Image 1 (cartoon, rainbow, N blue to C red):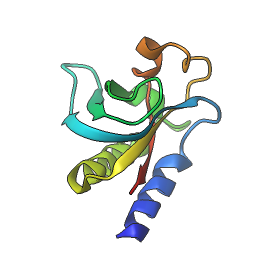
Image 2 (cartoon, rainbow, N blue to C red; image 1 turned 180 degrees about the horizontal axis):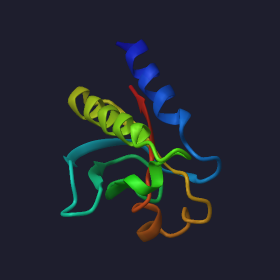
Image 3 (cartoon, helix red, strand yellow; image 1 turned 90 degrees about the vertical axis):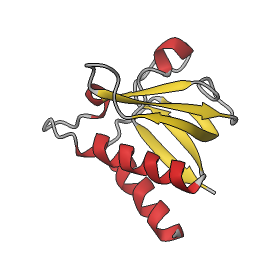
Image 4 (cartoon, rainbow, N blue to C red; image 1 turned 120 degrees about the horizontal axis):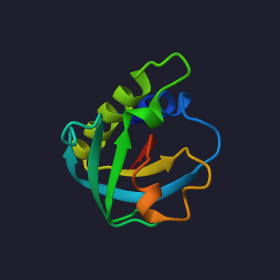
Length: 119
């Protein structure tokens, strides 16, 4: 099981953009919204942990996760990893890959892309 979590974290992080900031560390996912109206994104609610977005709603728009060739594979892997963390009750660390957005929570929490699952 530990290997599965490690693989998910590695594959999720592979397509991330350099820079950005960790916006929630050691937080627990309390709810997952698979879509947000007509917008191409999913949302999670978190509880506990540290960071500018800990204990808040965090948005994962597809546009932030797209890689150079326009593939949505990284976004799909992140969603799968979030479901795994939610089902297992493990904590997550959320990354916002956009430079300069980590200082304002209303912006940073709306542009997440990557996660790390921890016990």
